[in-house]
Image (cartoon, rainbow, N blue to C red; front, top):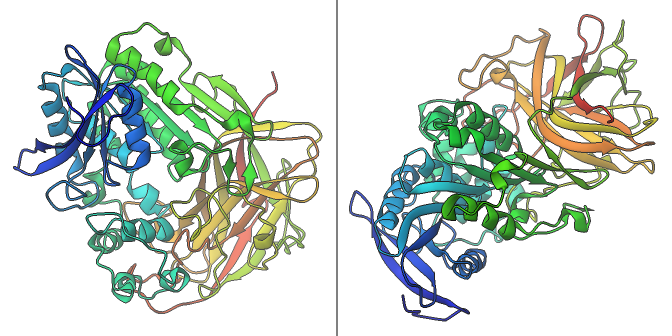
Length: 567
């Protein structure tokens, strides 16, 4: 292979090689190979909608070519130099499979193909893997593993407005589009929501299609890897972050394939590395997530981790990766790495911390407390949620434009001073307490509307009052029983809502306190529930919802913390 444009050290590059798909569409691939190679080699494949000449993909391809691999970087259908029309996700099953089959038959491929890359470039790996090419031997998806309906689209039934609007606007052309000229806060407030693209003067058909499918229906099932875990037959190494919008999905994929994978090798060889990172940190390593710096210990050389994995499964190098624990997690608070054997950890003591108050838990200045003591007879807390004045997003598992919607860890006190946020805080910890695992809130609540949202957030409060968010979640009332079918609420009736806050790993150090926030909005990370029970995306009318949160003997509202006993 001869270089056409430039010659990185020891690497030859061929550009714009056309790869035929089954329907005749030609996709564009750049091919990197060790200079002067003799004989076929294993191949690393990247498939991207973000331009196969973007820096991190080029650098990764050069890295692999300098370590004895051929690397292929392909623009997906309808993007950059590839033919066809781009519509997210739908073509990637067949196109990924066809690309791997084409690579496997090239004289420079030794029959062993691995896939790598992050975000969309990660999900296409899962999609290709379920198609069963004999050439595909392993995948290394970074920051991507979840049911697409749950994230990024409808977490707990609530629409992921921030990420879906910004991402679809950036990807609606053949090349990446600038979005810094929009008045985003105004656009996020558009009603009806289905008019957002029209008001912006932007053609984004996928955005409107997502609005038309709020239920987990056939549209989403056709894209869901969870429906096809049995078809995953290769080892997989995931890399992700606690503050990533796919944080829960990493563990769902890990456990799902370990249980249901299509081969013993797939079931035995699933691995996850997860640190204190936001979405892009797994492409551009950084120690900062939001406004918190987790220190040098949080820095990881992802390419070296990947290389060991690829060497094992594509070259047969006996380097021991298949004998290592399946989990490597970063424990925040003490900021240390640790290996684990399963998820949740076998030694977990799931411990309820109950909500308490005398009926005035409103804001940081209220009387809300949190303890392991079950409630007796207590007055409920009440607040009003007005969709015209939603609680603003303050960090969390967001993506992908932090200048528009902040992501990561932030001080929550500005939010906690609002009267429509209920705040429950424990006494200071007498000793360190580790919380590692999935976190849920069981909330007993009622509303005077036919539909509304409830949100919950877990916060680590430092001795000086700094309140760092760890994880959070949301449940839309009509989806309290299932995200596949809507069932509106009966006004005034108390329900037990399960709010999945997703996983975390954090040590609440001695003197710190555990805090839980309860409210009904997190905007614009999620769209506003207008509280009418009307057709999603078509509503214009707003109602104020008067919310009641119960915490008494008959309604023991609590957060269930995965406490890890001290060794």
